[in-house]
Image (cartoon, rainbow, N blue to C red; front, side, top):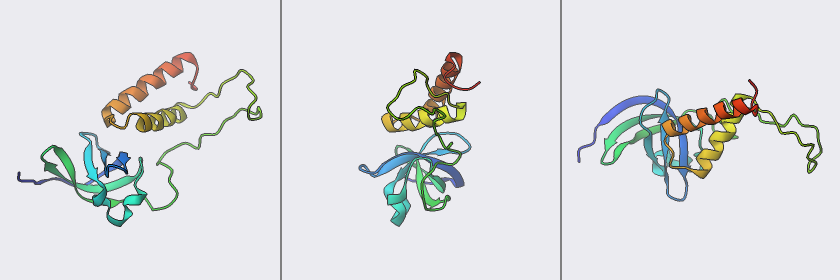
Length: 150
């Protein structure tokens, strides 16, 4: 099959990456189909790959869909904290192990971050569009119950 480059200089985030299998997917910043990425596309930095990592890449059409042709990590190599990730800390003052019957109330952003991390960990096959739809539905539901700040 003939492969051709379909996008140059695209930017996106790694949404999931399976180290054992050696591949994952990138969600383009401008939206669209998730892009397949192989561990070899990261070269010597493959051990640093994590969800939320920002990358610039070229896309080519492969036999099974879009895939990375070349890639460059945008974010600095260092301690991992996804871009825009809130510093989630509890506002409760009860000592660990003591339950005062209250629950933490998170901001919508904090709640969405927690949901995203859980979904990526538990259901790594979700597409970016599915992940986004599920997150929004859960935030709306949580807001209606007072589980997140309005």
